[in-house]
Amino acid sequence: EPEVTQTPSHQVTQMGQEVILRCVPISNHLYFYWYRQILGQKVEFLVSFYNNEISEKSEIFDDQFSVERPDGSNFTLKIRSTKLEDSAMYFCASRRQGTGANEKLFFGSGTQLSVL
Amino acid sequence: AQSVTQLGSHVSVSEGALVLLRCNYSSSVPPYLFWYVQYPNQGLQLLLKYTTGATLVKGINGFEAEFKKSETSFHLTKPSAHMSDAAEYFCAVSADSNYQLIWGAGTKLIIKP
Image 1 (cartoon, each protein chain N blue to C red):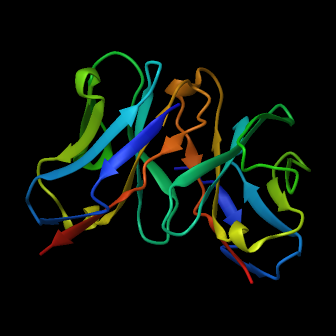
Image 2: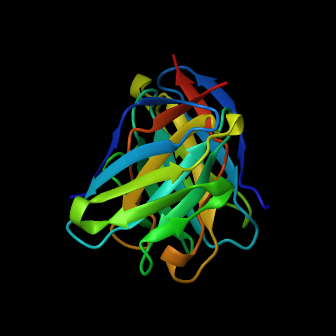
């Protein structure tokens, strides 16, 4: 089965530093997502991306966050100035196209971000 | 607003026994409902989903779930647990097809030999 790939699997950074989390969605997929899960809490939707622009974003996705599809294969999440509370597992996901409910959402294995 | 409640952060069953993981939701519109599984050190994998039509949904690995509108529930079951079913299971709801999913807190399934 095709896979969504996320790198790195673990990222440690100092508070205030910028981080970029990388994702390679499945090659023929058109819709891309970031979710996060703070330890012990629920998975939370961050943002969805289609046709080179954000289609939906949550309240969590403030000005510190940005997403980009720089080269047609990667899908990145940038946190401009990390805070302690940004420590979480970040999941990238993608799906193909068509009526969304009939499409399967594929998740990557996540990047564990630790902000010190 | 939508929300999802999963009863029990941990559920322990014996190998071969029935698995029942509970999920209740609230939604102001007919929901799309999902169960995802996360095995250790892996990503989230779709087990099954309900969108429209038949309320009993069959998924992978022998799991199934039944959408009961009157009870606002979407409980996950499997007749006979296997050791390989040990994982964390997440119920999620979406108001539409855009996958802005609202997630439950997850239930860790423990299988006793």
